[in-house]
Structure formats: C-alpha cells, structure tokens
Image 1 (tube, helix red, strand yellow):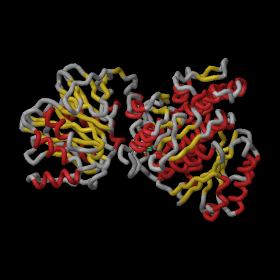
Image 2: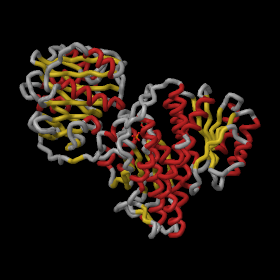
Image 3: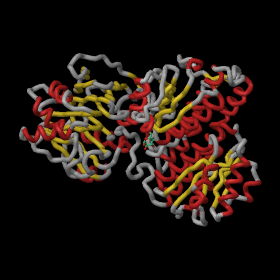
Length: 604
Ligand code: G6P
C-alpha cells in the first residue's frame, strides 16, 4: 500500500506532486520520491523515511518540468531504503514508474529479464515492470505498458512516464487509482484528498483499466486496448474536511467530528413515526437466513457489535470472524447467506478477497463502506454508506462510530422486516439513536478528566480491557486503539472470561479498563471488578452517569451519558479513543502515523 500522484499540465510538477504526497502520506511513509520530465530528461529524486526527508533532498535541486509522478511507500518487497524507494527507472533512465501493490510473479520475471541482460538496482517487485515496459516499447508507451502488464500477475496501481512523451500511462487492478480532471491539466492519485485542491471532477478507474493522461484529456482502455467509457463524477468532500481543521492531530480532529458523523450516518434514515429506518436497499431481509460478517481490524469490531445487534434485534444467526480467517476456513455459504463486508477504505485486500470467496459460494452481498467509489463498493450487490468523510488518522475513530451506527440501522431494519422487532420497541431505539450525536458531544467534554487519567497511567507496561455482550467489541477496540498509537501492550477479553486465564496477569501494576455501563449484565460486570480489586489491579471504569455505587470499587470512573444498553458502545468507545490519544501524546508517539501501520492494507 502506497500513495501515488501524477501531474501533467502547466504548473511546476514538483509542487503539485509534493502537495499531493503530503495528503497521501497516511497511505504509507517508509519512503517517498518523485520523477519529473525536465528538458534534460527524466529526473528522479527519492529518499527513505518520511516525506520531509524527500523535501529536504529537493531543496536546492532545480526540477523544472510540468509533468511528473510521485510516490509514498509502505514497504512490502524490499526494505525501506533509498534504492527501493519509488520511482524506479530503466538503466537508460528514459522510462520510470511508480507502483502500489504486489507483482506476485516478479521473481521469475526478474530472472528472465536478468538473463536477457537487464540490470536491477532495487529489491522491489515494482522495478520488474519498468524493464518489461522497456522491452515492449516501440514508440507507443500506452501500448507498451498494456503489453507489459499482460505478463504480471497480482495487484497494482501503476503510473509510468517516458522521456519522449508528454503523457502519463496509468493502470489499476485491485489497488485504487483516480484521475482528476482540470482545464489544460490533469491529475492522478490513489485517493481523492490529493486532488481536492485542484479539482472535484474525477474518474475512478476500474480493475483492468489502463489510462493515457495528457494535458488535454484522458483515454481509457482495457488491457487489450479496447476503449472503455468511464464517467466523470463530482466529489462532494471539502478540502477542509480532509485537513486537520485546527487540531494538532488528524486523530483528535476526527474524534471531535464524531457528533456530526453520527448525524450524517443516521440523519435522514430514522423514521420515528413508523418505528423503522430507511436504508434504500433492494435486498429483502426475509430472504436472509444467516449473516456472515467480513472485515478486518477496527471494522471487524464494528462487525462483532453488528453480530450482537442482528441476533438481539433481528434474531438472525450471525457469524463473525476476521476476513483473513473467513477466506481460508471454507465457510458454509448458500443463497440465503448474506455476506456483510465492512470497511472504511473499501480497499482492504483481505476483506475484498473474503467477499469474493463468499460471492463465489453464492452468498448475497452487502457492503458497509466509507470511501465512495472504492473497490468494495463495486463488488457488492448493494452498499450502505456510513458517510464519515475522509479519515486520515491511521487509527480509525470516526469511521468506527459510523460503522456502529450503521450496524444499529441494519439490525433495526432487519428486525422490522422480519417481524421480530415490534414497532414500540423500535421507536424507543430510534428515539435513543437520535440523541446519539448530542450524547457523544457530552462525552467529548470529558477530555480534561480523561487527560488526567492518562497522566496517571501512561507509564504502565500493559493494560487489560474488559466488557460484556455489546461492550465486548468496545473492549477490543479500546485495546486496539491503545496498542496502535501508544505501543503499550493491551489485551481485551469478555469480562466473564477473565477468570479463565488473564486473571493471572493482575497485580498492582496492571490498569484494567472495565466497560461497566448500565444494562442487564451490569451486576455481573461489577463482580468482575471485585475480582480485579481483590488482586490489587487498578480499575478504570466506564460507567453510566449517576452510578455512584461504582465509585466505591473503581480507582477512576469516567461517566458516559445514559442511553439504551444496546447503544451504549457508541458513547463508551469515545473515552477509550481519547484515553489512547492522550497516552500516546504523553509518550511522544507519532499519533497520526504510528509505526508499522498503514491506513489501508492492500496486501494480504
Ligand atoms: C488496517 C488499518 C486498521 C483498519 C483495517 C481495516 O489494518 O491499520 O486501522 O481497521 O486496516 O481497514 P478498512 O479500511 O477495511 O476498514
């Protein structure tokens, strides 16, 4: 997974490329590089490390030219070194390219190319394509790239330039790529935010598309060179929405956007009078006998919440596992199975592949997705958009909340359609759902208290998170947030399971975060808190406003507003996001770009 940008037009290419890369750095930040077509030929500058290293290297280098490509890398094949950074060039330097994805058969191709006299300068799979294009090139770059791509297997988004052509040839299969349309200039990027300062008219390339981009226009064909028609669409994201908006980190900004994100996920879909929700889905819930959740990471925890809700409100048996397991467990699927794929980016390869497996086996498919036009949205029968807006912080926050809200919408719709959720109960839930944006706003006001708790516990080596029923996924997500951005070891368990093993970890050094909001299992959770206390553990409780009892048992209490127990995760995860954030800041971590992680993982 990497970020790709391209520019052809009248501006100074380096400026456009660096600006685009800055907006894509969340896609990977192991190295960065640009190639610009100058009067002296193609010039490549690339550096390992973050974009700032490239910017430093470019100081004092005059790269004049109005056509170029740029790349920010998340390393797969080959360590994050200067030679392995993109762009990669042929030996004569006349062809250079950038690549996101993996060429699975690159080793055999590389051996054959070496045998034919090609010299390699990097350990990457990507460089192979530059040499293949060189071999195929007979004056037509567009054709040469298509022919070269016929020989590679795998996932890719590529952009290729040649010293002798004022054009960029771009192609994609699996990995995302979008063209931005301007006047007398055109753009290329792996994601929309890179294009927003320049244009809102975009073309999303589809799998197997190859595009020739010049100043004047765009020509798109399939790999065989047959023209394909792709519509230009207007994207409605504002640039400001994709930037930090005054907060020190994207993550904090995104945490604070959650009230309006909930508004946009839920707004217009809640039908209080009817006790139902409007989802605009053709799928008939009565035809579904079983749901299988497919997702990774944070999205998978939203899916686990979905399982609890679908079973509680719609009485549909729901299976849950992470996509990388689903795909290889030979799941039992039939035409009455609904594969529910959840993804912020819509580009996570494990999720896409698991979905394809479900489809091959005959499942119906529904995507719960944030990124419009992403690969997942094109591979499912129907999409329920969560409308969270662009999420830049690598650790997902607002998309998680929006996914939880989407799960609640789905469960209510399914419950109503299947006749197992009565109108009154549903109305009650919907009334509570309406309150959620305001309730989350109240939780955000607790930030100073949460910062104080973070101050007290940020030196801990380990954390344990516990929750029951719908709060089990909240515990998982709280632990994931903490480990992702603070690098503190954190584990999560269903609270009732603690006594079967993790209890051995408890001593006075272990902070235990317990989701102890009001609900049918509150008393049981209190017993678990007692068990922690008895062994000297420090309890940080997330409890419902007005619960005085819990003060006697927990060292720290963070109150969240009263809400329907099934919706409590939506308010309860917010303090856990803030806790992880404050701890990470205290420890001096790189909150928005934690080590080893990437925003969307497009490799298996
Ligand atoms: C990566 C990210 C996680 C994210 C997961 C799923 O691993 O680091 O934060 O939850 O992918 O991403 P998706 O875009 O499919 O929701």
